[in-house]
Length: 258
Picture 1 (cartoon, rainbow, N blue to C red):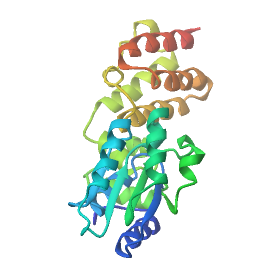
Picture 2: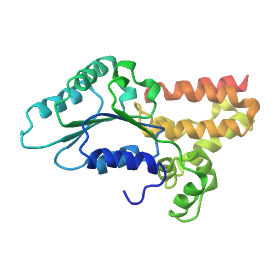
Picture 3: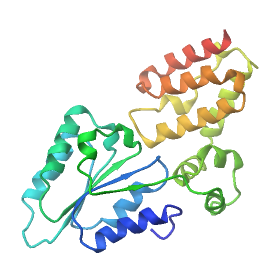
Picture 4: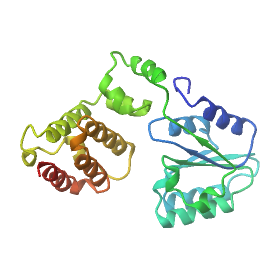
């Protein structure tokens, strides 16, 4: 955890909750790429730490483990990931877990978008820790730790260290950005533009999708008159499975040609 930057107050508050032995439900939320998940896993890792995906089976499984845990263990930490992406059945299962948590248990509800969490779940929180994008100065120092700073990727990352770290070694993000710029500028026939490799790999809701979305949105800002089509495309393409990516890519490019 020593190499993390930004959000010192949230990290300290979470650390204090563990060191003081406080039990209850704690919400940890903020944009992807800030280090929330990595910090949580490092903070509550160990034999008593349980990290689960936000699925019905995952939540039911951890509830069963908590009920049957040895009585001599003083406390447990449970991290439920990506709660803002839960299905309705998963939300119901999570609500039951939060309503009847075993004593001396800390449940960490992790999310990128707090607005995607139901009010019933939010009402169970004892405290919340909001993470925000880090300052430009901190981002500059973080980017420099990789070597030469890529100013374009630094702008796209917009204060998210995790985004910069994922894009830095992958040249396809620059290629996607350049492809979108060319399409908006009308420098070639959009309908003949090949599907960017990154789009063909989108599958499900992942941090990878978020970084692709940020790349497209940044490209749109470079040419305001053409922004609406590419922004509509960005929201459309990221809400469909990868098998439909090519169809939506061509549909969006065709709209920009008109």
